Image (tube, rainbow, N blue to C red; front, side):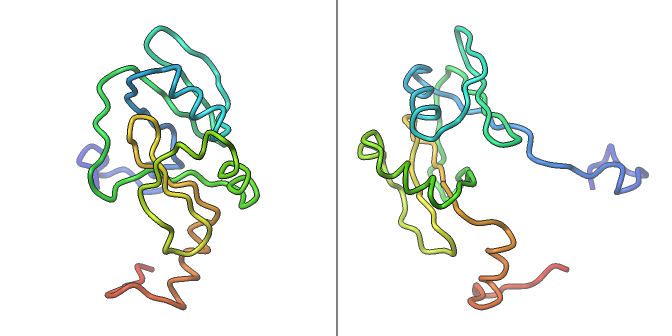
Length: 146
């Protein structure tokens, strides 16, 4: 437990959801086209050094800086309907997107990089579908934490 929360009831201090993601980008216009036009995010506002876009109940902040994308498996996954993923993969702009991994897990997934090399996953599934899949095909050393 976080030191500052000692003595606070768990129910009062628990996280209630994901809020936003901030990504450093080299070229704001290129990134806006990628996230709005290809991935379907809604543009909200832009300024000289950044922009806010929304997706579902969350938001994305693009800020001009020096991107330092992950070199390991770390990535950000966005939920899409299966049909939306098919439409995205058919767009002309998708042909120039770098695919960093093939899908080997439950549900449809597209593992792509944004223009700055940030690793993304477009996923048609949920935690519930992933857990159900694990019951049938458990990972090595799987332990249920109920």
